[in-house]
Length: 560
Image 1 (cartoon, helix red, strand yellow):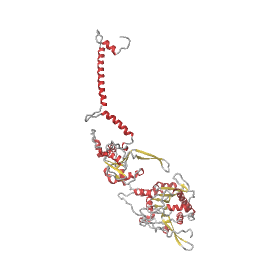
Image 2 (cartoon, rainbow, N blue to C red):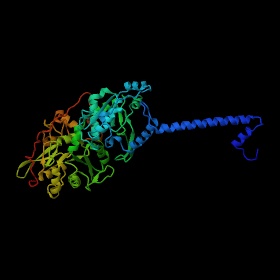
Image 3 (cartoon, one colour):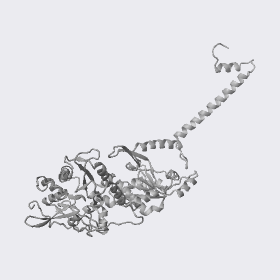
Image 4 (cartoon, helix red, strand yellow):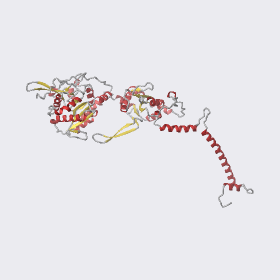
């Protein structure tokens, strides 16, 4: 053999040369050549069939052109995902009408679904879907016809009834600002009508997809008798007032859907329905300002802020010096009883100049006054803030001039708190500054302010309820339940210094001389302690027309 590297053809020639005995190497080489040739022929034949299989459609009945279907499916998927949602696309002329679509589930499930069926029976889940008249046809019905079929119970809630889906109307305005109200009403409807139909209750939007079997599996490891709230966990970082420390608010995403246990729904349902209170909070806007001092801002004013003050539409704190921690607004006035009238005037002037359009009613209280804000709004809902009126714990003071002329000065207790209308504040702001009566800083702040209001034509009006019971109180509750008062109270109380539980309105508004610990106790007794099984309905205790007591409310500035 030559020194060059042998090729397959040179090896073949040497092996078949005449006169040479066949070598084992030659035999193996020849057999390998035969096998390689056979494989090449098979590949050529199969490639031809593969080409024809991809390019020629299958026309026989029952045939499936799988490769063509795969290509079409890939192209269609890309088209669908390029859009935000296939449901939001404009319908094409070639689209089959929704009424003609076959939505029956004929898929042959070969998987063993025994476990899924068991959980369907053991883990009962009611799902409710938040929808709207705008998206009911395009989204909610798609949920009903897809994953909604696998729920134990599914309900659809909208702002209006729809018997076709059907959807339950909640009589709520549409829009993001009304989502919380919509959610509350839906859960209350479920509590009232479907509490025993499930152990778990899930809220979703009409563009949420839920794999029900996986949801039941998750919930199978939880106890519905515990107060639980499950979902896509979020937290919101915020800085607390006062101390300034960072805190986290934990909640679940609304869009991902969240689940509450039966115990959580029970607690929600048994919570008092505050729909009416929320309505009045929007319609009867009250600004409350609290008179405090550097000495009591920490011990009293902060407790007001953290208890009943949270329920005010807006609350301001005024002191002789500013305090950024609470915060308080400094009035640059000396402390002491002799400065209370000046302090009050400056506070009302500040509010007139900065907050006249933020509320319809303006209430002054001390930092040891407790106010039931919901009852205050209810009382004021029957009054007109465009009239010059003035409410509180009604006192009167007899006067006699040097000519022996007798008359009464009517005013409201400063400690119990008093409320003036927007019109009264407007008169104070426009005319009070130049008024001799409003500029006299006498020791008794409430008497001085009453004289100021009288000079501006603001009426001292009756605040008792329809049964003649008191709502504003210048003492703690136990004074009135026992009917034990100081001697001066009998002389000055315009309501006759009545005593006993029956003398106080069920919708009392305020109490004075409430220490910080008592304030926290009252917050618990009023808003948390509830006798089981007693559901109190609303009472109509507002007078049809609050009688204005102004006959004796004479301007005394020229008589003293």
